[in-house]
Image (cartoon, rainbow, N blue to C red):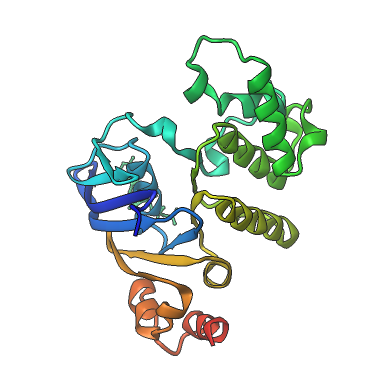
Length: 255
Ligand SMILES: Nc1ncnc2c1ncn2[C@@H]1O[C@H](COP(=O)(O)OP(=O)(O)OP(=O)(O)O)[C@@H](O)[C@H]1O
């Protein structure tokens, strides 16, 4: 079997003197949509940022297609990243297409002017998220769902075959969630490895190829949704009873 597109091997990360990741291991594969789930504060964002090389590792290795890379910023450009929506400066006076172009900085370098090919890539990325008609709109005027799609287009503009998205569904209405969910599956089937964090466990278990559960700083369970049918996995990760509504709702979708 070929090497995973992206892998975390036994990551240990401390922030402000506190152990946040304590031996977290995860593999994401080309052609698949993987969902990373876990309770608030479990360390999902920290794990994503570690995969991107944005946080120093105390120990462990991140591998890009089987090749280890150190912490620090090296290799960041090889991964398309969608941060949480609130982390972006939406009041900045820029148009949608200008923001999507910033996704190409990894390819362009900071000082080269974008060329025809770059603008073509921006237009294609906007078309993929069905936002072409908004290309010249100031970003400050967009709704939450439109903003999320712009951030996805910005990550796609890099042209990477690995996409990492932090809570892309949070705060979106159902049609927008469905549109994005379908887009992520389409992007995976098209030859990319796609990793999203989400709090929507039912969606994760119905729409993903693989689900990884992060709790207490480690991946406590991972596999296809069918492999995660055991109620104890969810009860212990989320600190609830096996008869809780959370566990029952998951059993209903797995059955
Ligand atoms: N820059 C930081 N400095 C110190 N502690 C941090 C920092 N960033 C996150 N933490 C802590 O690390 C832990 C994990 O946070 P993280 O944001 O990774 O969790 P999460 O699973 O993404 O949470 P949520 O589901 O609430 O978004 C939390 O206890 C948080 O307070």
